[in-house]
Every structure is written in structure tokens, then in C-alpha cells.
Length: 242
Image (cartoon, rainbow, N blue to C red):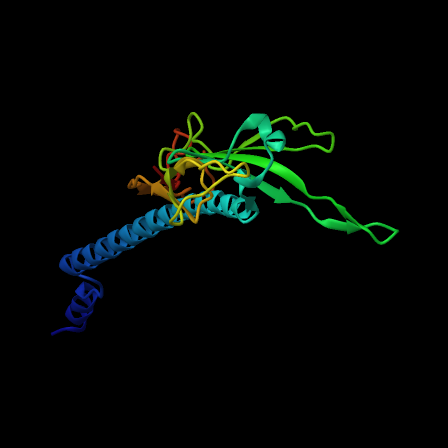
């Protein structure tokens, strides 16, 4: 073989990948990208679900905490004189609404050493939808205006459909055995008896949804809205979650 033939043979030798190797590598890359995309999507859904569930539980804890705070100061209205009751309303415990009286405040020592009662009588109502109302007995013997608030925030118009729906379903009341009498010696009906236990049953309902995750890149110039062709932004890539 002449030197010229050896040189020609050497020029024909090329180092690189065959078409099959390139296709195999591309297939593996596509599989890896798809697996990463699915993992990101599942993680995003799990994070959103956990965040919304936590928000629902916070609302429920706020409602139960407010009820527990008021119930800890509850007094038996059957032992309160009729003249001190709010519009002659007695305590009442039903499945959808409870009404009771509380005594809050402290005793203050006067300069002369005697005690001054700064406690006040309150009339509180809880409805199963989460509404709480309160009235306070003023020093002049009249009751203050009704203060109302909704502990369980109702869903607003146009709110996120995935937001959990929190609601109290009903109140369970247990009484001690025996017959109770009021301050005048009359038998107290069951619904107006002083409760032994008060339980709130509630529901937290949450709807799940899947989200489409996508991406698009800004192109070689690293600027959105621009591109090598006449169409602005043709080479852009952006991400989205739907």
C-alpha cells in the first residue's frame, strides 16, 4: 500500500457515536425527564393538599378553642336570679345551638383593704355554623349590645374550590343522673340542665385535584419575548401549573 493510499484510509476513519447509540441515549434521557416531571407533580400536589388541610384544621381548632375558653367559665343559670337573666333567657343546650352564661373578671382590692368585684355576667350563644354572639351585663343592670363573630369562616364567593370546607355538625350534651332544680325549687327541663359534658362533632371536607406542570425556556439569547426569527419570543420557555 502506497503512502497516498494509507493517508486516504486514515482520513476515512472517524470517531463518534452511531445512530443506534444516539437513539438509546435520547430514549433514556426522555424517560428520566418524564420521571422527574411526575415526581415534581406529585410533590406539588402533596404540598398543596397538606397546606389546605392544615388551614382547615386551624379553623376547627380556633372554633373548639373559643368554645372551650367560654365553657370553662360557664355557671349554672338555674341558680341565677330571674332579674339578672338576659331578657329572661335561660341556658339551653341543643344539637344545633347552645346558650349559656359565664362569669369573667377578677376581684380587686380597694385602698381601704376591702374587695371590689370586677367580674361580669356574660350571655353567650354558639350556633352549629360557627357563629358566636355575646352580651355583657353592665353595672347599671342593663345588657350591652350583641357582639357577633363567625369563628368558622364561611367560603367566600369565587374562593378556591380546593379550599377545605370546615363545619361543625352538631353538639352532643351529656347530663349527670338525677333531677335538677332551679333557684325557686322548680324542676329544670332536660334542655336547660347544667351539662356534665359538651362535645362538638365536626367535619373537614377537602376536594383533590391534579395539576398539569409545564415548562418553556427563554432561548439562546436568555430573554423572553425575543428570538432569532421574526416572531418575537418564539424560542422562549416558561413554566406553569394548571
